[in-house]
Amino acid sequence: MASVDVTVFGAGIFGLSVAYACARRGAQVRVIDPKGSGGGASGGLVGALAPHVPENWNPKKAFQLDSLLMAQGFWDGVQALSGLSAGYGRLGRLQPIADEAGLELARRREGTAAELWQDHAVWEVISAEAAGSFAPRSPTGWLVHDSLSGRMHPRRACAALAGAVQALGDEITMQAVPEGVVVWATGWEGLQDLSQEMGRALGNGVKGQALLLDHDARGAPQLFAEALHIIPHGDGTTAIGSTSEREFDDPNIVDEQCDGLLAKARAICPALEGAQVLERWAGVRPRARSRAPMLGPHPLHADMFIANGGFKIGFGMAPKIGEVMADLVLDGRDGIPDGFRVEDNL
Image 1 (cartoon, rainbow, N blue to C red):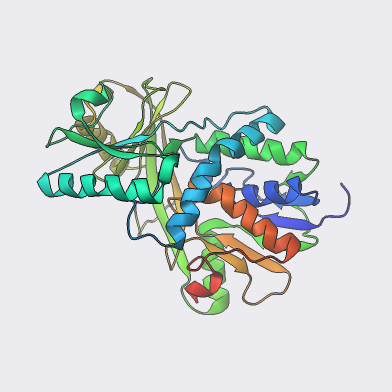
Image 2 (tube, rainbow, N blue to C red; image 1 turned 45 degrees about the vertical axis):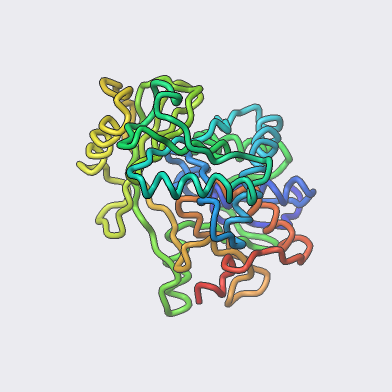
C-alpha cells in the first residue's frame, strides 16, 4: 500500500471504528493487531447497545445518545462496503420493575425521556402482558420499554468493520512497522502498559463471561434484569451475559460462573428453558479509571493518540468515537467531551 498516514494499534471495536472513520476521509490507514480483528474482548457474544437512564443529563449521556442515533447509518454503510452484516437491529429493550418505588421512578422517566430524547425514542411503562412471550418476569406486572436500545453481534460487527476498512484500500495486519500518526486502541493490556509508563493506575481489565443459546427470538427486544443482558440476535441465537470479575487468574477460562448466568437467565425469562448452549466465551474488557472512554493525545508521546476504555458501552459509543478521533487525528479538531479525555484519568 502507499505511504501510511495513520497506524492504529488494536483491531477491536475502537481501533476499527477509528480506522474506518479515517479511511472514509481518504487517509491511508494500517491496523496492527497480533490477535487479528475482534481477537480480544470485542470478539464476544452479547452486543447490547443500551442507553443510560434519561435523567441527570451530562456530556457522556448526550454523546452516547448521538452515537446510538448514528448506529443505523453507520452499520448500513459498513455492510454496503464489506458485504457483511453486523447483525444490527434497533429493537428496543424490556426491564422488569421490582416494586412501587421503581414504578413511580419509571413513570417520572417517561417525561424526562420525552424531553431529552425528544422524538427520537421513547421510554414507557407497559404491562407484562403486553410484552409477549419473550419477556422477563416482573414482580409488579409492569416493565420499562425503551425504543432506543439496539443490538448487534460483536464478532460479526468486527469482521464487517475490518472488511469495510480493507474495501477502502487499507490494511489490517497482525504485524508491521507503524508509520505516520499512531493511535493506541489496545484494550485492557494497553491500559496496563499506560499505567506502568505513567507510574500510576489509569485503568484495568474486568473479565466477563457469556454464552450463546440456540433460541430464536430474533424479532424480540433485548432484556435487562438483575444486571444480566439477554440479547436475541438476528441469526436465531440468543446471547446471555455477562459476569464482571475484577480479579481473575486466566482471562480466557470459562468456569462455573458462566453456568450461573444460564440458570439466572432461565429464571428471568422462562422462554429460554431447554435451549441448547452453543458456545461459552470469556474475555477482558478495558475499564478506564474514570469509567468513561479515554480519548485524546498520548500524555507522553507526540503524534500519538489513545482511544481506549470502552468497557461495557464500547459498541454503542463506537460510531461517534470514530468520528471524533478522526477529527482530532486528521484535522486537529478537538470535539472530545468533558469526562472522556486522557487527562481525566491522570
